[in-house]
Image (cartoon, rainbow, N blue to C red; front, side, top):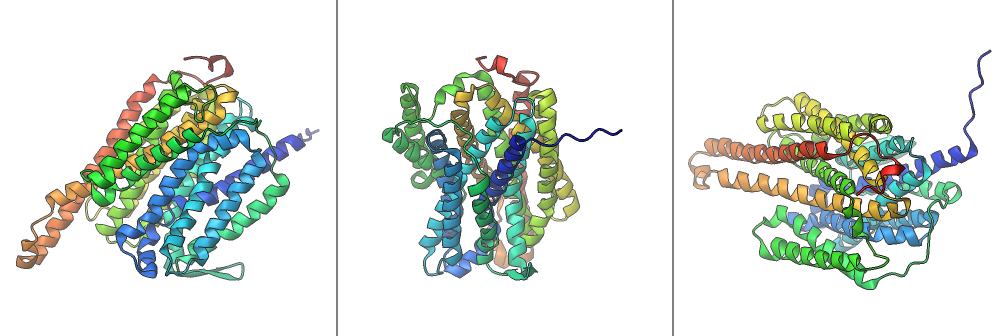
Length: 501
């Protein structure tokens, strides 16, 4: 007689329901990080602003998100899990409604809406990881973190493609018509966010221990100013270049000085606002550095590649997004597999293999031409994203595994802060390298009148030189991560080596 399959316990059902709601809600929120990239031209026209101004819709999201991540450790410790998640969803819904209804005469209102969305993203990304680490045991933690990697990696990757599809024309589903204009970008995610909010009221539970801790105002101010200035400086590189003292050099120096003082202050506090002592653990430091390098390699190329396809290849925003979509789907497919492998083999083997894939799939981009087939670009991008999937969440799991349970919230906040700064830094470096090399090789303006065809040919060649150098820099970051991965400990982290320094 066949054995009757064991039913899932109510406790496991609750865990699955919570993680499902947390992942869907987080996906919808994180999606907004990159969704406006392909919509900026439409927003420029709608709000009658120039390119430098409209870029602030991306910059403000990046800055506020980066500022909120360090604060998340305090919020996670102080506020019950359920109410913190519901608050984040409510803030996101408010920001999305504000963006959807913003009059085109009030660009500042759109920026405010983006700030509210970023606040929610800064809360849910660390919260999702801390909850997963709490809900699941050591033996199944890799699978849970692999599922989270599906959200953190796929949402930013799918954002530009979804936006291109929305703007491409009107679409009918469930008897409703969406698309064709920029407001639909916000309108299409709003119902899903509201559904998740309502279901979370009934199914979400308080799973993290909370305690009454006082808010250190000095730490909050230093954290906000320091990380805010640093991220602002990096974000301004693409518009003003590395040589701009006012917009780039000064903010980065001031931000770094404030962060240095913030770090010194945290190390002398009995109960720090953001526990920088976690960096005293060698394995946490190495894994966090590798996660940061992963984001530099991933997001930097995610930004440069669509620009190449639109400016050099002449593809539309939708077509360039569709070229990269299989890579996002590949990451979604591989992330759970990588989580299972982490449970068996640990992070070191996966990191070495993953960074090898990323490096090998990035180097061929150095040889892209005007006529490189889109299918070739897509296949390489799929391999890259598979490599990213094999590194991102296994490394994050490893970083959290070497910390005690009491340090998990602080460690997650530190890990996410480093990742956010790395994303900003990687985007700034690759964009500035691309622009500066292209400008240096651009033909003289006089040639445009004397021989327009020659000017056009040399201009495209100069632009390609910029892209080639940028991709080479991305490959260098991946190679550096590949080498550093050999310094990870072998096997899987377990409670016995959490005290290992």
